[in-house]
Amino acid sequence: AQKITQTQPGMFVQEKEAVTLDCTYDTSDPSYGLFWYKQPSSGEMIFLIYQGSYDQQNATEGRYSLNFQKARKSANLVISASQLGDSAMYFCAMRERNSGGSNYKLTFGKGTLLTVNP
Amino acid sequence: DTGVSQNPRHKITKRGQNVTFRCDPISEHNRLYWYRQTLGQGPEFLTYFQNEAQLEKSRLLSDRFSAERPKGSFSTLEIQRTEQGDSAMYLCASSFTSGDLGETQYFGPGTRLLVL
Image (cartoon, rainbow over all chains, first blue to last red):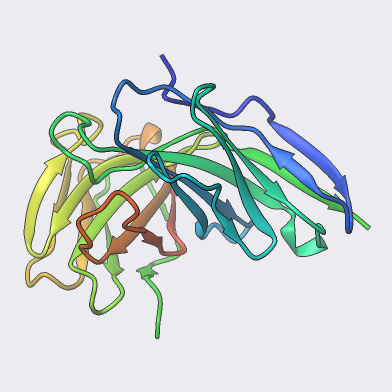
């Protein structure tokens, strides 16, 4: 089974509008962390935001916020006031406390390609 | 503060040749990771170092792949007898041990390999 599912291969948004990118995850580990990364066409993965499984509040970082619904195992990324420079691939990733004895590696989804239209 | 750097950025090689990639992590980071990303997929974990010790290798890392981090600073990833299926983006990331799940991995720009 997929550990991270991103069901939207592509999304379009108008400049200055908000957009939500979906991410659902699968784990039986009570301790885990969820990350979102942005990958422009240049290839570099840029860290955006982090949410811990025990965090009581949704994470926010500037125009990025994470809509964390633990019971539904979803961690959607919300980008407010979209800018042309937000056009990129966006990846959701998870780190589990007890993934085969190691808690270091990230497991990524397949990503969502966001296009911001002027 | 410089980020993670990787060289070369692009590599084209013929099947059967050996290739080596280099990663220079953020200077104070003691953990270093290699991932592989194929077209239309997210990165997949290959291997991980803490200082100079290689602590984990994915089953994706066949015996044609070897990674080193000799002095706990830069790392190299070598692929011997390359195959067309090795064509991918090879990403390096580094982090500083914080002991919690929120420890963030910072990625380099990647090396894009094409095997002809």
